[in-house]
Image (cartoon, rainbow, N blue to C red; front, side):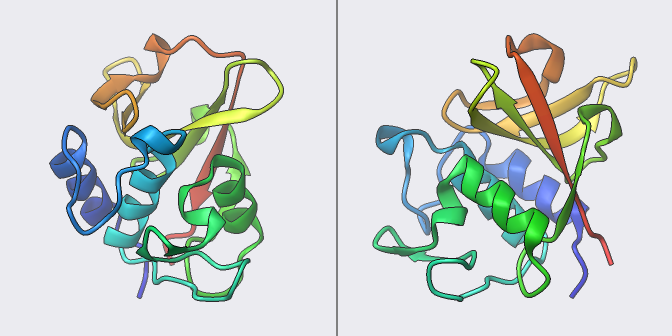
Length: 156
């Protein structure tokens, strides 16, 4: 089934300021941003990939892949994946469309925060939804960061 960004965006708006009870909340476990992003991508139609250790899946707090909730792990999975689950190419934040993901590095080295693109403002600035510091329709320009990268998702 192809990726449906509209369904993923609807999920993001629905859960940006709440937690879906079907998923663990990682807020006290290092942050919930990538867990939230994975939920959005799954709601948009990306099937889970149950490959042990290297897949992308969530069944419970104790049964999940590192890529479901880890910033670097989701990136590594999505840009190399050719099976079930999200498939992306590396891009710049200026290239994102609603339904894509931006990741931020605050120290210029490690990427530590994932943002789900839900639209653009009148000037073309990406608007994002995320967890940890819960936000919806927040301009990317309101973040203080050193580097940003984007995952542009295959919609076929």
